[in-house]
Length: 262
Image (cartoon, rainbow, N blue to C red; front, side):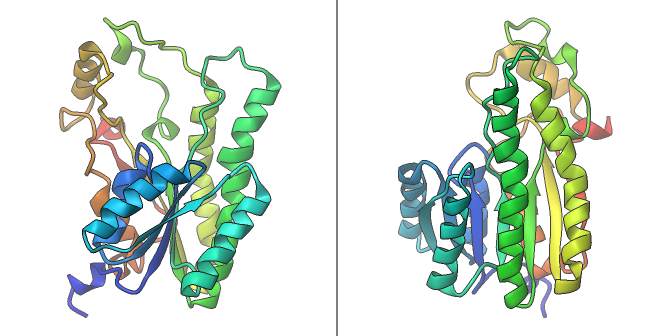
């Protein structure tokens, strides 16, 4: 196989959870551009359909599904829909995240539990459902979307000169840190079925609402001198989903402009 052909996702199916959101949009777009049939899923089906329609207008394959990660039945139904529609799943991108307990340490136990239910328990449950379909198809690729915040502690100096709260909740760091070793664990479990499991750890994604001081502070903290943009994850997700990464599993890959290497 020509090396460039090994990056093709033609005749592959992919599910992207949170597929029209903050990171999901570029992940969904990249997989579709590489040739996959992409199922864009979240609780907001209308938002997913808007993106799917944009991609179809470009001649790409995309469909919208409603997925509630707080509901076991919803996860089962989505997987059954995919199997009935195209025969099963080849690529699962665990991207969705709920941010219901992000306001510091002073959270109720219920708020922490709700966050863990979606960001941890549902992650385990959906990953297992996806792996079962991939096993029937002879293999596949599971890609977890972590965060550089799961690899390092908080950098208080990033917030100097801003009104931003530098004292976030511990839950996000805990969940994204846990994803590091969950990726290794799942890779160990599913490798015998030719299912690869890897994790991408994005750095900060620049947004218009960010104060100029924060952008400047954060940019200095990276080795490339900038925050992430709306295309920085596209190459890595296609690579990990494709045969170009056929011998890569259990890996945690920072895509953070060198933030965690500095």
